[in-house]
Length: 401
Ligand code: HGY
Ligand code: MN
Ligand code: MN
Image 1 (cartoon, rainbow, N blue to C red):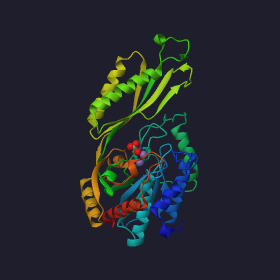
Image 2: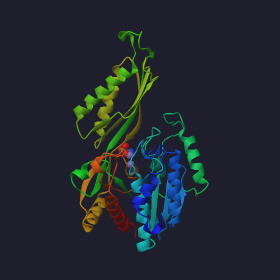
Image 3: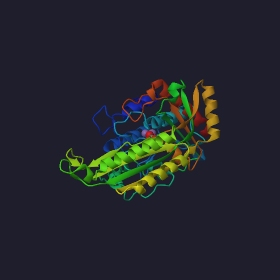
Image 4: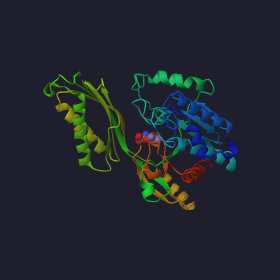
């Protein structure tokens, strides 16, 4: 790939080849081998483009173009994926940031402020029960990770050290600068822009979200000889709780969302009554109090049960509002570039909500075909990818030059 014609689409297609599942499936969970390959490729590419590169202790990639004054105008996104993912979630924001910075330096030379691109190591929470470990580390807000393990029992710290070893041998170790602003571009992952026929989403706020792991302990026993009245069937208790919460969700009504995306039964054998059921709960709403009410109902239900039910909440993110001044600047840029836009909330979580805790932020969307994401059917046209990058690039130019 000749650097001068480097496009966002090229980078996305290349990163899509780094997967731990057989191609065309894309699975690049944090600290998997494919994750290391992707970070290695991007850091190497950035070096070839003349950027200073470094990696921090979590595996965040830090790409810098020095300015003439103190202060880091920052942009980026994440490179970890969900299981059997699409090509664009996170990667588009990383690719658009790298190409934007490359083209800004080609067109305008050295910026006034540093341009800092962050390639966040992990955002999804798809391997370990923790979201945003990359951006939380950048803002020095990382919770305790010593005991963190994935569902196979692999330790976060050990997997991190294994994944980072080849990168630390090749690239300088460093720490991201605390930003003076942060911007992220991302696929919408929903249907709004397509339905409203708009080209750009300008995000006003990101929903609050809570995630739980629920463990129900019953009693494994023989499926044939154990009378129904004598069973302690963990899966049946799980179904009753999940259905109860579905009714709570229906009463709350949209735009509240409630998802049980993961469930494990043990011993998970056709002729054994499940002794244990472990499942996830993901709930979101722009108003955090709605999630508090939901959690109260969950806890009240559990307190009334004889069966042992353990509820562990491992994510409790408040909703975040993006900077009003940045929103107005982005509206102006969309007008200047004749790009239609929609101001909207984000139902998906993003690293922007973490960076919003320490600096002013902007979050932009490009359309997702049929609103699909977290799926191999995730798709955004090259034209939409390019248009979004142009809006991001102009936004960064206005802030950094
Ligand atoms: O799940 C989300 O909201 C995001 O895609 N991590
Ligand atoms: Mn994402
Ligand atoms: Mn995602």
